Image (cartoon, rainbow, N blue to C red):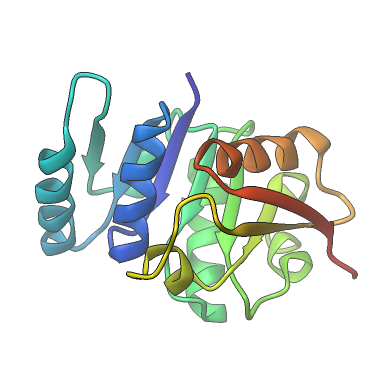
Length: 176
């Protein structure tokens, strides 16, 4: 079973966590804000079954310890992205792929700030599109931006994740 760490329990993080759990992934949802985890807990309880569960954790290290894929749900601002990628890069196992939703930042630049640029990808979508009230599951194309150094298995893992959530993934190599 693939383990997905979702960093940030705001609207996008909660939506992703529940969607990934419904798709059969083991999900760990992290946030440093107890109030956001409390909201996530209420949402998870509302849909919890024997097959669907989301583990809530309050430390990035606990979320990524065994993760195959980490998706950050922090604001799309350079400082926020660099900080979370720095944490993920240093705390996660070498096999883990980092996916960051962004429409503002270059994945080539972000990945170059890590020790694993070959395992970094961007999800080129406005997060409000995914978690907003008008979203229709399966109606969207998700663009996955890779670097020229991205390993094929890294982009395949992320594309497969989004496909299992009902999207049509499209992989593009970002220019340097």
